[in-house]
Length: 116
Image 1 (cartoon, one colour):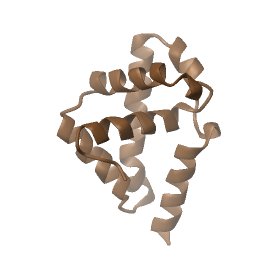
Image 2 (cartoon, one colour; image 1 turned 135 degrees about the vertical axis):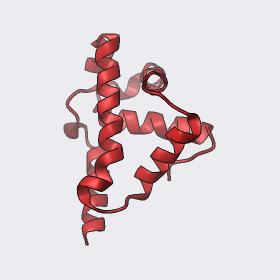
Image 3 (cartoon, one colour; image 1 turned 120 degrees about the horizontal axis):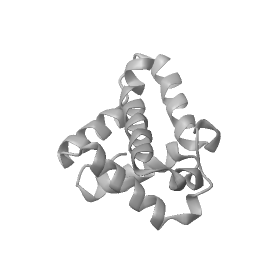
Image 4 (cartoon, one colour; image 1 turned 180 degrees about the vertical axis):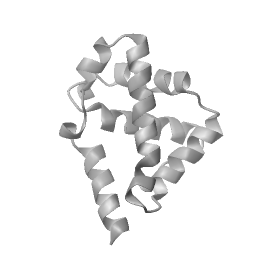
């Protein structure tokens, strides 16, 4: 039951613009260091979701594996997200939480470490 609730909560977080503190339009106006801080916090939040819910979440494990496969640092992840945001202006009005996830999903697929 805890696993189901945690999965629903994570899905809701990633699927709704209201769950984000800022949207793509606001993100684009941030300075480089502000973007980096936002991305680091977003990835840290995603990676700690299972621990906070006290369940094992497959997507969190897959994201962690992908980051390891890419030997990704925060600057690389920021570049991935920035490129995704600029290439997808149709999502600028959406919350950045979902946009970060979508950017990483695409990057992980290209790196051969897909997120289901």
